[in-house]
Amino acid sequence: MADLDDIRDGDNFGLNSPADTSKFYLKGMNSMSWGVKNRMARIFNRTSGRTVMLAFDHGFLMGPTSGLERIDLNIAPLAEHADCLMGCRGTIRTMIPPENTQPVCLRADTGTTILTEMNHNVLLGEDEMISMNASALAAMIAIGDDATEAKTIANFSRLVDIGNRYDIPVMCVTAVGKDMARDARYFGLASRVGAENGASIVKTYYTEGFENVVAATPVPVVIAGGKKLPEIEALEMAHKAIECGAAGVDMGRNVFQSEAPIAMIKAVSGVVHDGLKPAEALELFETLKNEA
Image (tube, rainbow, N blue to C red):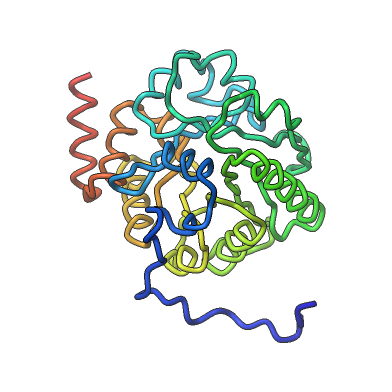
């Protein structure tokens, strides 16, 4: 058991020593199976090594929040512009056309809503997950939440067991307790816990010192978009994260709540895949918005 009296913050993240990707282009994947690598290659662009995931799993917590009133009208038209779709089984089955060929990251846990105490989640059934033809499975861990940390980590570990059985990558969605600082130390802790428990992808929040979070997480890290920001701020956040080594974004509200969602997801893709600076991406956004 770790000595809890001598926990020292990491201070040697080897920022000038990149991860070995000689056998596969994504870090941490060299020793993975063919099936995992093949599915990861669907999600992450093979030229840039990055991804723009479109998250619309908010409904199982928030209901028909702004921008998600009609998935068929608001999200389905965006699908072809995303590298991967992240949603829940119900909305994917009922409102994403089956002829969609974009890979799906299935939200594989479900639980309480915003009206009650959060994070008391359970996993979907194993057969159900497989039937969705997902390229990845996702579940949340609540680090620092006394009531739910152990349960959510146990859920996540069980999901990794299922993913390993069928060669399906698993994405860890990190959350931290309400009393914990939203900083690199705690998001780094949550991200590393996800990776230690078998995540192939970690989704966490951008913060100052994010390069240390990425360096200490041995698998690709994508950032959550979080609450709706002005377009330039969302593009700046994406750009900073990519500069720190992030492997992409998993954005929701900053895309589907934008006044021009298709223009916004294309602008985000420009930052993630094409190296556009935030000002250049905003110019692209404004041009596409005006053309529409």
